[in-house]
Length: 182
Image (cartoon, rainbow, N blue to C red; front, top):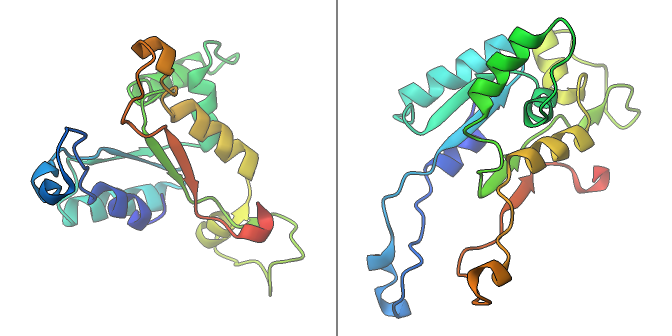
């Protein structure tokens, strides 16, 4: 989540209604349905900053900031709790349960560099906040992809809808990430 800018851009979007109509009345078919955003941030200082920025920008009702690790998203989606951390896992599940398998889109902005990356220019930042934001200290790109999968709603099967084509776009994950690392 960082400071929240990527999530805020998503929260400010207006959603096009899928009702029938010509393209001429497309503007009339725009709805004010608010997009809800879950921002996940592992670092306490950045989670606090993100929540404050959401409130200051009038997005407090659209943006939920959860302080936790991206790996916990996958753990919350699983039914088992690890030994000795059952209470913590239950609290995590309680926060994430409304979001699991319900999101139409997930935007992910993970750290760009592997921890021991030769690609990163210069020395690693001394400040933990910057280092953890730029380097994969606790999670890899694959971990972020697994978390996105746990949050995305299942794609609707046209057969389940009587074979009719739906107008709802399939759930998608969008990554803010250097192409040469993907």
